Length: 122
Image 1: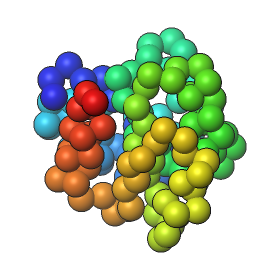
Image 2: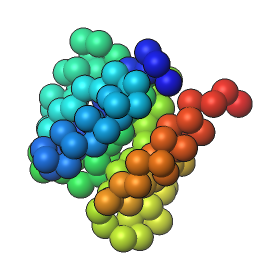
Image 3: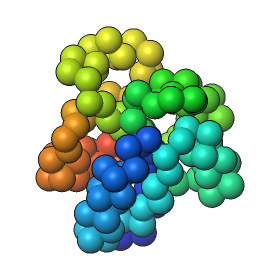
Image 4: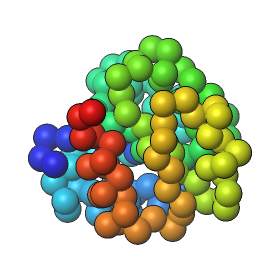
């Protein structure tokens, strides 16, 4: 997991900061941003290996950002985060290649397993 560069995008700053710290303790290089627009700039300037993306954000929302990422950076895996129950069912068709969803609050072991699964080739 060392050298994994991960971008965490969530408008809940407290949540994102705490999750980023927990991931850093597990050897992941995490950058947290709190707006979709900032995430897009970050990806353009320094593409991460993976994105953890909150679905529901003001401004440039998670699903809009996901579409842009799929067009401009199709090789970057994305795991969607949501606090809305059943959101994965409603979002599924718009998520395209994204098959991983996590409900908030996040269980760190579940997240680590999804990260490993998403990065596994084939």
